Amino acid sequence: MPAELTTDVNRAAELLRAGGLVAFSTETVYGLGGNALNEQAVARIFAAKQRPWFDPLIVHLADAEDISTVVAEVPLQAKQLISTFWPGPLTLVLPRNPVIPDLVTAGLPNVAVRVPDHPLARELIRRSGVPIAAPSANPFGRISPTTAGHVLKYLASEIDLILDGGPCRIGVESTVLQIEPGTSPLLLRPGGLTREAIEAEIGPIRFPQGHGIESEPQTAPGRLLKHYAPRKKLILLSEEVSFPRTSTTGVLSLLPVSHPEKFGHVEILSASGDLSEATARFFGALRQLDECDAVQIIYARRFPPYGLGTALNDRLERAAR
Ligand code: TXA
Ligand code: MG
Image (cartoon, rainbow, N blue to C red; front, side):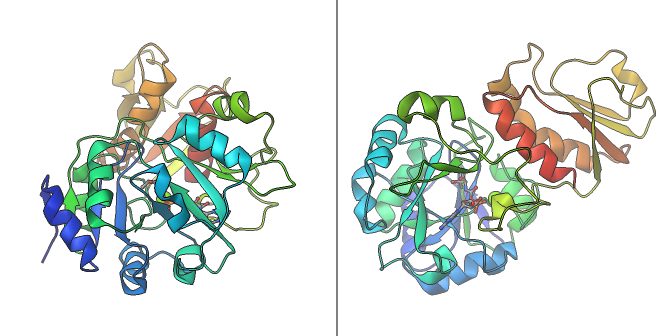
């Protein structure tokens, strides 16, 4: 039976407890949740997304105080970040508690954990009574969902229920930061919490140089070359090259473009160039362009290389491969 939309958090929590899969809203993107302590439920998540087993999942908690149920040890810097940024778009990669199944961490000694900043998500996790493993609720490698409708469209036959909490406030996935005592923290995925905000709290962190893509071991799905991708070809133009003016051109632009009628379809992310507004619209706009019949090729330009622009550039570069 295909999934249905609901706002009934009790029913959703009951389903999770029974080993079912529930997609739910968070402040970043929609997640595809299952009981992190139930290997069968976790296996169903991988199957529903067609996700390779070597890509570990993030475990979601209702409250920071529950962290010892998934993590063996919380280093000092992690404690500082937790007290400032949780609930919120920050995922910490920390030594795992042995109760977390290998399937969740892809056999790695660390587990990724976060507390989402969305009342419905936290209520769902709290009522389910277990930690919830949840990747973004999209088929593997494709555009992440920022509305319940997106989830319904792409995963309806694979899941049991979609808890509809409205459109996602931030619109890009959480920032993933690995913290190991003795080394400076390593940014594994730029996301909804900026590097600048993290460094203001705990000092310099390590950040992969350049796109940081080719040279790295693939310890994380966010580090895979092709990801967040539309079906159509996406081309990244440099500043001095103008968008080709044809009726089959799709344009993804931060700011308004001149003569929009000369393109197949134009998506403007923020009339004022505001990066928060642009981030909230980003994945939805990419989807619009992907689904627009007139468009054959999508063109985009990089965002300013700071703040949320870092996460958006990361997603664009992977989508363009
Ligand atoms: O905002 C988000 O993080 C969303 C919502 C639903 O919470 N979730 C999400 O999950 O984006 P997913 O599965 O699409 O991305 C998981 C990311 C990967 O980039 C991977 O780097 C990292 O989490 N990750 C998970 N477990 C890890 C581990 N044990 N070690 C290193 N990285 C890990
Ligand atoms: Mg994802």
